[in-house]
Image (cartoon, rainbow, N blue to C red; front, side, top):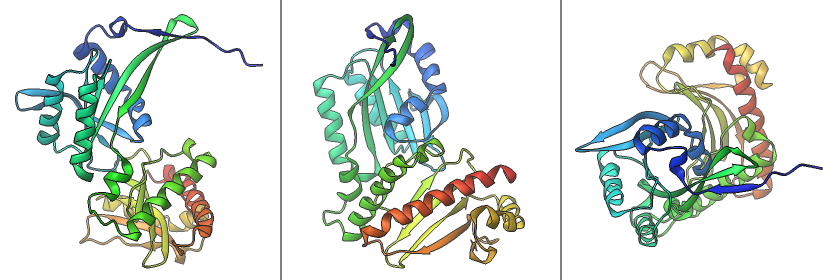
Length: 309
């Protein structure tokens, strides 16, 4: 039998963080995984107190392996109009893709305002409103933070809605990647990779913890092809290192060297290597086999990476 602890809420957030700027913001900057996990983002810190005109955004971060900037604004009190206005200023000044507003308690009028912003900003910008709580776990000396999403973008709306007539392909792509996420969770894939929110794209990126490269999987309806491999940003030497060790790479992937496609060149910034597989995306019965193929090769690539990186 498990011995269960009792949860008791601590309503005074300032017991742990007396000051937002000097206590809470530095703590959150060092623990962005709390926000990343709940929002499905792999966040990297850019800077604290990031200047925007005469104001400073508490935290500027970005999604790993992308140029998607994320603004995080903190309030250890109830939401107020002042911070709402600042959020919009920050979104513009930093060209952010996501705005995260953390408060002790979200007022109804601000919940409605964030919902309205998400309905009217389309797919290029998303607003998140979170409430933070503190809870004792049995021992009164042990406290744990808990973040609750109050408002967030509607992934389906923000992916499909920008064009009032979403294509069948867009809908299929969103369904495919959502099914992949659901399948990956049953395979303990999340022990090795952090899943991303499903989007209506033909690609899906997975962070490996190195800004120079990331794993990319694809499902191309028109070409009838699935791919899995490594996308290297601009590091030509890194690409050459992988190619110089293609025999060992092929052995790790369990394939012939000739099956690995290499796309590096001196004129292109990015380079890739990948495997391909035939797929009929419209046949959902094929999806589990494709998902297994993705997963096994992603794990094999990640296992091989330490020998090169």
